[in-house]
Length: 297
Image (cartoon, rainbow, N blue to C red):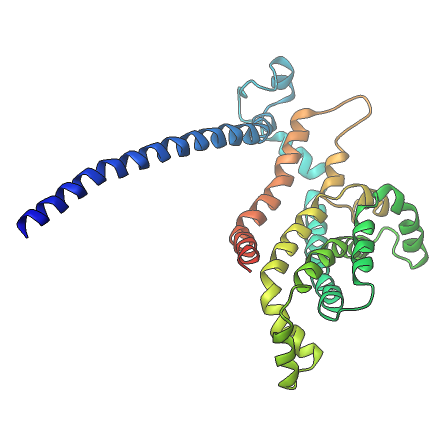
C-alpha cells in the first residue's frame, strides 16, 4: 500500500510540471494576442487623444506648432466660444430627446412588425423581409426630396418631429429584419400552449414573446440612439432654424469656405462626444447582456 502511494505521488509530481509547461505555452500565446490587441487599441485611441490635445490649444499655439505637439497652456476659450456661438445647450437637448424617442419608438415598431411577420407567419414573409432590407439600404440622398415634400404638406417643415418620424421608420426597417429572423425560429409549441391557456395575441406578445426578445430590443435601442444622434444629412435639410437643429449640424457651422478654426472645431467635437460616451458607459452592461443573451439563445 505504501509503495502504491509512493508511485502515485511520483506520478503526480511528474504531471504537475508538464501541466505548468502547458499553461506557460498557452500563456505566451495569450500575451502575444494581448500585445496585438493593445497595439490596435492604441491606434484606435490615438485620434481621440489628438482631439483632446488640440481642443485645449490656442489658435496661435496650433499655428506655431503641429497637431502632434502638446499644448503650451490650458486654453478653454475655444470651448466657451463654441458653446455660445452655436447655442449648444439647445442643440444638445434636441439631439437627446429626438434620439431617445427614435430609439424607443423604432424598437417597439420593429417588435410589432416582427411579431406579425415572424410569429404570425404572414404570406410572402421572405419577400416582406427583403423589402425591408432594400428600404434600409436606399441612400438618403434618394429619399430626401419626397421626405421633404411630405413634411411640407403636413406642416412639419423645420420641426424636430419630422426627423423623429423619419428615423423611426428608417431604423425600424433594420430592427424588423433582425427581430423577424429571431421570431421566425420561435418555438411553436410555446405559442400553442399559451393559446390553449386562453391567452390572446396581445397577451402572447407581452407575456411570452417580449420577455424573450427584450435583451435584443435593448441592444437595438442603444444602436438606434447612437445612429440617430450621428445623423447629419436629413436633419440638415429638414431643420433650418437654430432652435431646431441638432449637435452634428452645430459642428458643421464651424467650417467656413476659406477659414477653419481647428482648435474650436476640436473643442466642439469633444463636447459633442461626451454625451454619447457617457450614454455608452451607462448602457455598456445592458449592451453586453443583450449580445450574450442573444448568443446563448
